[in-house]
Structures are given as C-alpha cells and as structure tokens.
Amino acid sequence: MITSRFRIQFAIPFMLWTAVVVCSGLVVAWKGATEIVESRARDEVLRRGSLVGGGVARLSIDPLILGDDVTLDLVVGAALHDDPAIRYIGIEDEHGAKRAYHAVQKAGDESGGDGPEEILEARIPIELGGEVIGLVRIGLSSREVEAVDEVVKSHVLGLLPVVWMVAAILGVVGVSFLVGGVVARTVQEIRTAIESGREGELSETIGKLKQEEETCKASLAKTKKEESSLREKAAQEKATLEQLTKELAEAEKRTKQITAQQERLVQETEARTEEYQKLTANVEKLKQESEELRRRLEDERHHQEVLLRRRAGLKESIERLSHEYGRKAGQAGVTSASPAARGVKEETKSAEAGEEGPRSPADVFKGFKKESKLRRR
Image (tube, rainbow, N blue to C red; front, side, top):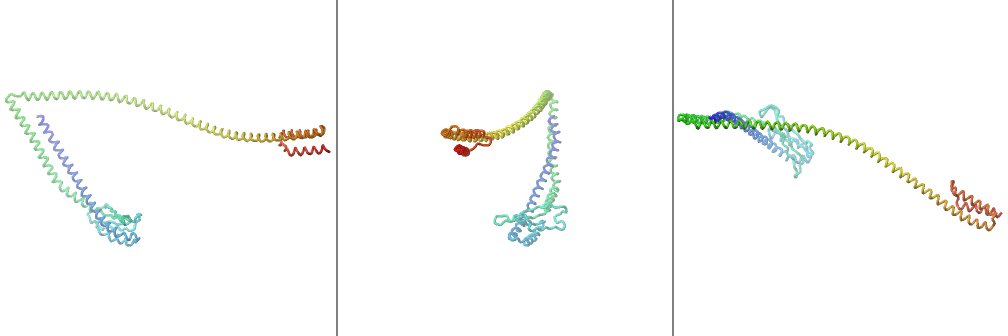
C-alpha cells in the first residue's frame, strides 16, 4: 500500500518534469537550428562577396601599380552592381590609403525590412608575386541572413503545435501506463488482503506493519541522535570560532606592536644613518685638511732644507777663505791682519743671520781683495 501510494504521488511530478524536459529540448533545438542556419547564410553572403572581391583584386593589380586611380574607380563602379547585397566597395594600397571607393543606397527595401541593417565586410588582399600590394573591402547587407532567420523561425513556430501535441500524447500515455500499473497493483494487494482476512491469516500483514513501525522508530531515534551530535559539533565549532577570534585579536594587537617597534627602529636607523653621513663628511673634510697640512709641511721642510744647504755651503766657503786669509795674514803680520779678520767675522755673522739672504763667495772674495789693497797701501 505504501509503495502504491508513493507511485501515485510520483505520477504528477513525473508528468511535470516530462513537460519541462520536452520544452527545454524544443528551445535548445530551436536555438541550435536558428544559429546553424544563420551562420550558413552569413558564410554564403561573405563567400559571394569574396568572389566579387577576387575579381576586383585581379583587375586592380596593374592600375594600383601604375597609380591609375581613374581605372580603379571604373573597376569599383562596374563591380558595385554584381551582387544585390553589396553596399560599398573600396580599394586601399599597401599603406592603408584609400585609392577608390563607391557606395550604393538601395531604394526601398528588397529583403523585407526597413530598419537599420547590419553590414558584413569581406576583405580580399591584392597580391603580386606573393606580396600584398593592396586590399579590397566589400560591405554586404545582412538582410538576406535576417530573412533566412525569419523563415527558419516561422517554420519552427509552425511545427511547435505539432510537437507540443506529440509531447502531450506521449506524456498522457506514460502517465496512463504508470497510473494503470499502480491501480492494478493496489487492487491486487486489496484482493490478497481480503482473501487473507477471509481465511484468518492476518499475521503476515500485521508482522509487516510492525516491522515497518520498528523501522520508522529506529530511523527516528537515529535522526534524533544525529541531531544531538550535530548540535554538539555546532557548539564545539562555535567555541573554536570564539577562540580563533580571540587569537586573531591578540595577533592583530601583536602585529600593531611589532609595527610600532619597526617604525621606531626605522626612525632610529634613519637618525643613525644621518649621523653616520655627517661623520663621514667630517672625516672626508679632515682628510682634505690633513692632506693640505701635509703638503704645507712638505713645502716648509723643503724650504728649510734649501736654506740649510745654502748656509752649510756659505759656512764652508767662509771657513776656507778665513783659513787662507789667516795664513796670508800671518805672514804679513798680526796687526795688519786684524781689519781683514774683523771683516771676515762680520761677513760670517751677517751670513748666519740670514734675514735678508746670505752673501755669495764672490762678494766675500771681492771684500777680501779690497782689504788686501788697503793693507798694502
């Protein structure tokens, strides 16, 4: 009985799902057929435009090379009416410059529509010896594609009632078979129960009912147990979530502290870097000053060495002259030698003083000769 009721309750949803599936199939089939036919019609229009463009490209090779725009204009004008779908034809050179262009505006509507039409463009290269020297651009009307699309839609819409009727018949037949089977099984079960009741054999039916009742009770207990288990898991997950929230807050706090420490360290590092740069600049300045001082000391040392060398040479010359003068003066007499000796001593003192510069040996020798002449007189 339970199975029979379930089958009866299942019949209505089954019929509805059948209708939905049939409608979906019809929509998909309609869309697919429309797109396929429209794509083929579009390809056919572009193929016709490519054929016309190929002829224009062949006729445009020589005029394009020679720069004959008049001939190009005549070729384009002649090909403009080769196909009723053509709306414009243009020729461009290899640099993209427009060399010829013709457009046509159809009077009235030849394809069953007066709205704005979509233009399909076919591009055919003009080649000479494998090298592209230009381009033919042909614009074609999409009215033929739209007309084909409308024809397909009208045919599909015309077939829709038939398809719906067939689908409805199939659904009704299927539901009839299903309901008939359910009713037949139900009647058979009722008949079997009546016969069993007449014979007094109800134990089997009662046993089945008790077994089903125990099964339902076990399922209910299992459901309650699962519900309590789910509640415990939910409580545990809630506690875990709260703990994670606390840990996340602490982590954010620590992150802020670490960020503040990092900022402080960055500031200290920048300050130390600035101090180091100042120290480096001072060291460089001291290096330059020490180098300048060393150079000055070196110059002073060199100057003193030069002065010492001059004084040493002057002293040796004076001592030699004094020695020779003394020897000659000793021969002439002690009294007459005193003025010359005093002159030599004065020269020596003036040379050692060195304020205005030492006298040369030639000057000293001249003074010695002068003193000798005075002594002889």
